[in-house]
Length: 278
Ligand SMILES: C[S@@+](CC[C@H](N)C(=O)[O-])C[C@H]1O[C@@H](n2cnc3c(N)ncnc32)[C@H](O)[C@@H]1O
Image (cartoon, rainbow, N blue to C red; front, top):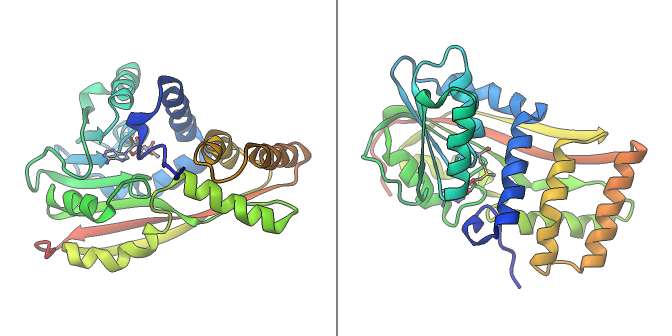
């Protein structure tokens, strides 16, 4: 069996698994770690009055809604996701929050976006690029629909750096690798983007990293491991009893106040400076 990133293959999951991912995306969006990281770049993708922003891979619309909710935001957000279930949920959440006039959601594939060239003032992807089948095709599409001079923002984890503490270092290392392989199609893509961007007519204007660390207690990484550890077993990357014992050790560490988990996240802000040359 091979690893099947659940967000890449979301349309092949059953309803129960999709509902779990919807719950995870929504609870993640309320986590202080998530809001802190998004707020750091949200102002930079505000195109001003009557501007249009596209979020590619919007999921349940958590990030698109966070942008639209900003007091100063006066433009329009369009969110695209491959999952009709996620888009249905996104529309409902926006309605519930009373912000649907500022947001549109569409089902679509990031590899071939259904929008004309140059139709957005800003385009962003928040934890999408680590999941897609072909990151360069997605980058090309994001640039194509961005107007010249517009801002492109990509935020994602460098998941090759994701690690959980465990007293058996050799087992801990194997489980880190299995969790990452089961959850992300492109765990190292953030290391490649600075090299790839110029070839797509992008000038990288700003880049920064954030170490997300939970020591003693954990919420962000607790929810992550509870959601995605079962995919290690499904992918056959480790036997169920090994995963269960490792997960048990993480729960025990949380209870004992000895938990450790960390990952580095990166934000890239680029400008479409010219015509893509590839
Ligand atoms: C981790 S979620 C992030 C959702 C949202 N940006 C957020 O931060 O809450 C990744 C999303 O990318 C979507 N996705 C993955 N591959 C895609 C593709 N080829 N086209 C459109 N969406 C895709 C998944 O369906 C999923 O909703």
